[in-house]
Image 1 (tube, rainbow, N blue to C red):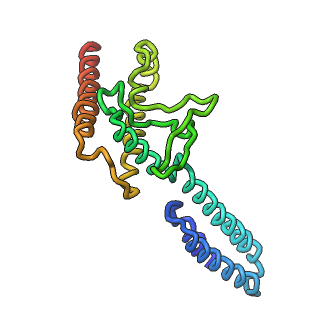
Image 2 (image 1 turned 30 degrees about the horizontal axis):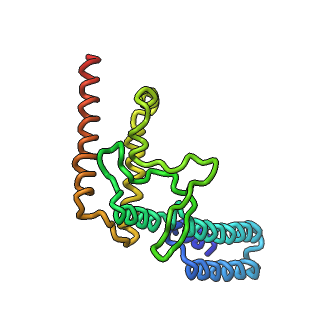
Length: 216
């Protein structure tokens, strides 16, 4: 029974954690611990089983704490809501840009470097915190100095792609969190895909092919 409970705990992913599920798991562990403690036939291995039992009790409690902290974090659990209100506010102000790529407003990272407030209109990104780099958008990534860009890309050839992937992940998390993707169906979303992503990917493929031919 101890081994079955260990397999059950290790098989539950962190995103499946719930307070009720934690309570049920702890009740099962307490029951198993009671059986181990009072079973005289386990005299030789009782200490080992109790050690495993205590370890996985703390393991389950720690999982719950981690889930709670992540779920209430603006960087993880509340990030889809933060992105939703950020995009919607910029669209209402007619100040949301998706193309060209060097002015795209989609966030890559750094939103936690701003003061985050709550109003009747939702979450608000306020003033930048002191001693931070601020927020990195796709536009800032594509505005880097050309010389520094080339030097950096020599060491990390796919860094542009990685940054775009992070931004796209934030976009998709709104959909998976059942939040409306406000720019869906707008011309700016189509431009972002056709004139931004596809054009960028096409240029990258062309440059790679051209450089390979030059080496030959």
